[in-house]
Length: 211
Image (cartoon, rainbow, N blue to C red):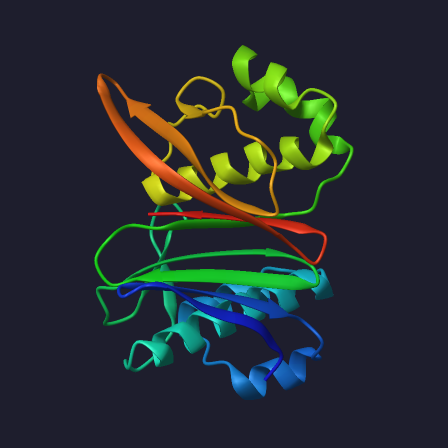
């Protein structure tokens, strides 16, 4: 099993990092895919995207085994948020070839994202960074990637459309480390939720997760 990392976060939560080295056939021999999942896979034409989707479900399958439950597959709601079939545990998934990640929590909503620092982020940074965030990461592509990846994770935690990355999701300035926790928050109307955003650099990618 090509799992690079399956790590306990606390007594209620684990996360998984999977390096994709298998063919589609090999992945399908290992991973349970629900009927809804098969429909989703049939809509994808790019071979690498198919591998990413299956491997991300493989991550979830391993996490469900880790918490001692039976994995029956994933379904997605109207906001494209994944849920476990016949289990109340919360999950989130992400992928950036050749890697896939997932997180599980027994009680709390979760969000996870994996991204690679690429120049494109600089070109679109004005769309998702407020002035303070832009000033904090100016000229540092890795830091910029953490902001993007972190906001994606928080967006997934919320699980609903309507959050504006630039206005509603805010990440406090931070000193760049290989691994750390950053203060962050998101707002819906007058309500503000404060989030501890975890990030780490692994295999030239950034992984962020929160709950």
